[in-house]
Image (spheres, protein in one colour):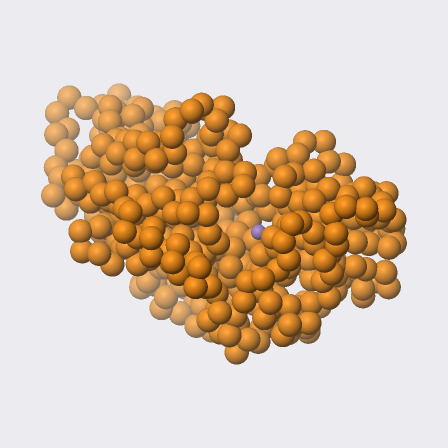
Length: 502
Ligand SMILES: [Mn+2]
């Protein structure tokens, strides 16, 4: 569904969820500006039991002059034309249900309500403001000419991603980098974020922690509060010497909200957040900071009456006991009796990064999975795997093992987000597709492989800070010509990309 599809309706009412937050307001305002520019009669409304009270939100409404109206729950005649619910789904428990001639939904949460005829739901986005920003761009709407709109969208994303720290979708980052905003106003909103009541909730939460001294993690269950306070508590907790990893969670009306932090290289917060929410919600972020949410309905289906405290503590323990850590610097694989495999000599893509004009010394590789910063020296390459993986390597990892060939290689991204390289200092973006050349793995690329029977976190020779994850069924591989050079081959990849050497 595009915004242009909704232009046949008039009037248009844009409804925020009850207890509005900055994101629903920012996203709704984006839609308001759009439909107003198309000459529609537009209203921006919200309902529910309580009116907007939080200081930062009152300030947002006031300074940005957002034209929102409170509408009573009862006695409301059906809305003529179109009603759009933003940052929530029509019929869900967090938004008052009004009758309307036509209904559309624009949201970034998991699909809760099935069978909506007109909807655009992209659950992998950090904010609904990002989704509206994408939709405005699809119609060529000049977002950057309007600082008020830019500020509203930015603040929506800011608040929904725990002050940008739990942001993980590349589109969120694209929006954040390009919006035209009023920085002074955002600073003011940011500094009126907490009420005294919330300060007290945060304080009480912090003295009621549970601590695991074997794995040095802490878990905190906070009273209901604004999700941003979870991030605040977890940021604070991590500064405690004995705590390396922490999880803070609380109940929200339809589930749980979590915030995760890690300051050790053996635990990536984004991965832990995904682990804690697996099958019952979604989670992600960065290596140090991440967040997520769990659907109460899915939780109860899977864990029935298990108390949330027990669930989180068990699951944290499971995470720590599931993996052994291997550091390539200190590990020598016993290759006796192991089978040799070579990488199949099939056409692959590569990009020589350092020869891209204007790339600079430090380049950001932006993919669906997030950002990776590359320090660009002579012979920095990207290997483009057939399954869409992009692996940055140095010349010594690439040149001996691949033959460059003069053939066209038609590489296309497999994800909806097209990967890019960026010179962030100069704000120049390069499309990977424009620089792809072809190569073929040669005879030198032979490895010994060993099947994993246990989960492994492997720090390879070329990356001391980032690990590769292997699960039982995957393989540990060592280069035949350099057994210290080890890495993980996923179960599926072995059959597809490698062949046994007789
Ligand atoms: Mn939101």
